[in-house]
Amino acid sequence: MISNYKKYIFKKFLFSLAKVTLVFSSVILIMNLFEEVSFFKDSENYILLPVYLTLLNMPSILFEIFPFIFLIGTLFFFIEVIDKEEINILKLNGITNLKIIQFLALLTFSLGLFILIFFYNISSNLKFFYLDLKNQYTKDDKYLAVVTGNGLWIRDEVNDHTNYINAEKLENDKLYDVTISQFSKDFQIKKVIISSEANIKTNKWILKEPIVNSNNNSTKYEQLEFFSNFNEERMLSIFDNLSSLDLLKLEDLKRDYEMLGYNTQLINSYKHRLYSYPLYLAIMVCIGSILMLNIKHNKSKVVNITLGITISVIIYYINYFFNAIIETKDVPYIMSIWGPQIILSLIVITNLIRINEK
Image (cartoon, rainbow, N blue to C red; front, side):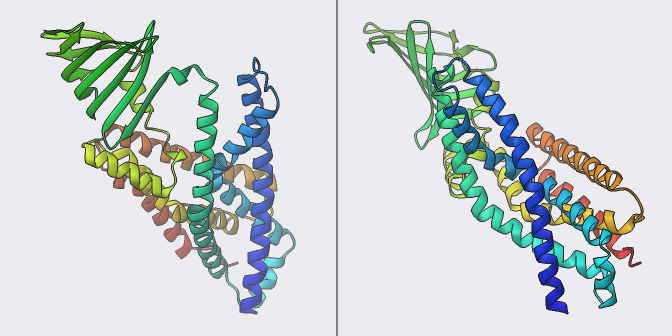
């Protein structure tokens, strides 16, 4: 009976997850498609391109909401086994509620590892293609910032010229060891500006002790204003879209940042968020299981599902709060990422000790 009950729970649980995933996928497809169609309403590729982009972006969105899919899938799983009184049959054969939760938690953790290793790497690469393709249809293609082994590189079109900017280091609102090469529309070099430091808090950069080379003349200033389409906020947002990088690319990016002396807190926090993903899924399933096994069975399905969704929203905002703390850099990223997991784990363990076996 032991092996049979595991097969039964395995099939039943996966079927519940599949149904919930299908519903969420349909909603994502419709909402994202409307968004993409609206974006491309003036384009010749009015239909085909939005559909293609929607399909590229869907896996990445699903990865983000899988924790809530697992929680709601758990609710539906227990609603069905309780309604059909199949849970009583399991208990008659010595399968306790605690054993059911333990098996579901282990199963979910294993599924979480699979999702992280395989599904995430696929979804992140699709997200990369999605962003790359969509950027070709936005005005932002005139403005580009990338990090390489040679530092930070920026291409910035301003009025009738293009600036190519290289900086050794970006730290908060300052660029260090800056070289700005300014070209005309016909790609003739107009001037080269070299500065040890640039304050980029606003779009009007303040260059410290710059040397301006133009028409074979070299002039040194104590301070110089320089207009750019980039400021501190926009510069930092360039590096926020880590969901388009698979695990290996994240490691490469971190290595480049460390070599250039950049702050790697956002990358490290995102990596640990990924590492905690299987545990997060298992915790959500445990919470859903405890919720269903500790309430009165005569409550309506609507009440159960509403309660589960409410808990999902609360957990989402707890995570959002801790993620916001990361950006302040006042709290170690490990505490910000693993803190919610530890709190939720303690809640789960406390409730498992008092699990209702009736």
